[in-house]
Length: 134
Image (cartoon, rainbow, N blue to C red; front, top):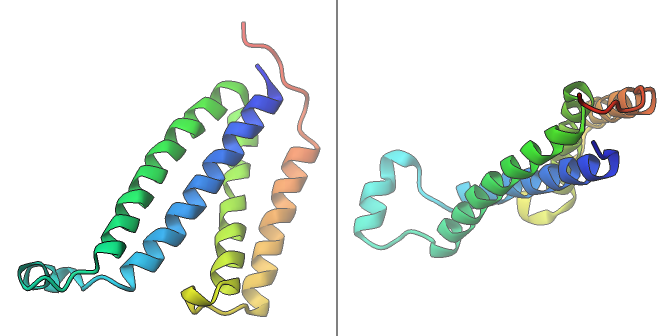
């Protein structure tokens, strides 16, 4: 077991999953509602760049899953799973910071995200050292 390798794979998974979430959000604001998709496809009014971003986001999710599986080889589940919470904070901060998402910061959301990050720090700062698997 390698703590550094496990943490690296977990953080890559978090980054890919966060990018996928943001990509999906951006795309879904530019694509027609599902009940209008057939007519939009037939008259050619579908934003091709939005479809490309959706496909890239799906690929990012798939790669994220593989990096998550690699992280689980080296990290205890409780420790690894807490790291996924970083994605909530990352998506919130980026969505509220970047004007293309038209999201806003709020005191309650920021406090909630701060508590999540505090929990991640608490779990990982006081985690026992890793043991080798038999």
